[in-house]
Image (cartoon, rainbow, N blue to C red; front, top):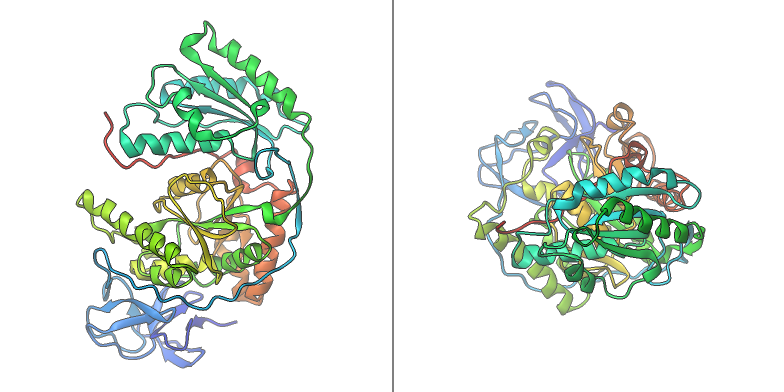
Length: 494
């Protein structure tokens, strides 16, 4: 087994695939290097002398510049490497040739919907339009648990603190997101629960839903009834009766929308877990399905790779706005654009935002970009889509679900237990994490380091996702009962 990996022949650094000791001479693809310091797993070592001010190459691209001379065998990290990124940039469209691949779609057992893609779950969702009725929603969900069984996979409430005292874009974000969940394919029945005096009440949210199956959605304004719990349960019973008629049937995988996200990344995320997701993404899009890549601030430094895969100048322009609008958002609050990576990322071996972004975008595979989405905009174009949302794990995963993802693939090198409203499949970058946190981790991409090929892992992940989509497997967040929403908030609260 390799102990040190030079990702491309042009790289000045290699990544430790296991903890290494000072004084060891360790081979890598292009030679061998003697370590001057201990090197934790996921961290970088200089393969040649690097001079102060010189760009440092990893993944074949610069990940920052050296702050001081770094000798061969030295540890390359936060003490001697600094980002090269700064401010908004101007970009030139230089499209790369991206071969189109086509595969016959496989099938999964899903719940057909008359107005949208099939669901991979048949759940009853209680969605408050405003935080004031969160406890009512949670109480109704608790009262309705005896309805679960047969074709009803679960009853869940999704409390949140918004829906009132919001302005402009924030208010629109809330309305769009709530409307998206009201028509999500994984919800076989939805109770939209309002208070009655909020800014984003039922009458304000309903227009954002578009066309919907009226047999699957009910509305309740609590101020308009004497007993909201009795009225709510009556409506839930109606929805449950409709849902009991639902059955899983074979559905083509071109009807799947899968969100792509990473969090708690380490130095192996861009080597094992994210490339495995990238192979999966290429497979699904070749079948006519859709994937969504988000966390825009973690594209900074790798955005030109995505821009080069835009097949039209219109898509390129949308991607430029996606990037620069997010930078402008940070700057409007006088916040640093490049306040990233996180402390956990750094402990895991990621040094700069370029380092993180080049690993993060591996999840997109090699397919062409087919769509660029605003926050809470639903997927309409098959293929790889880019979505405007921040890097925060729950906010970004919520955004993926709101845009139509029936399942989210979430890679991690450090581990996290959370779940968003849809199955949130955790993919570990290393086997020790998968072993230690087996109650959190669904899929071990660390197997790449012990003999499996990337294509084999991508195929294994495809089979796993189809099993989850068919209800043959539950994601660990589902087993643990961990699911919630976090709507993106950008501005003033009144």
